[in-house]
Image (cartoon, rainbow, N blue to C red; front, side):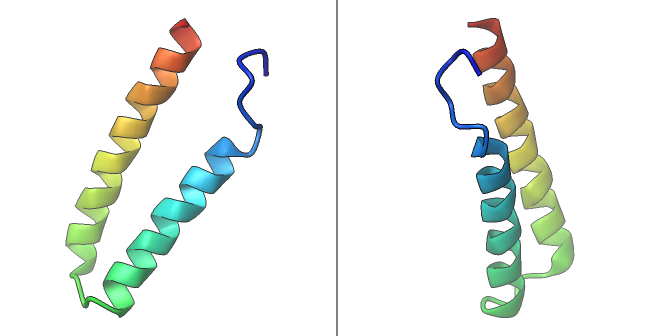
Length: 56
């Protein structure tokens, strides 16, 4: 990785989103459909961020 980022950044982001979904479902009793929508939104934001990094 020439940009100095750790190779584990993608794994950490994935686990953070997964953990957030579990906490919202178990603790806050948020419907699974809402969590799915949130996850799609977060993945779109991360993809846009990741594409920006590749262009730099």
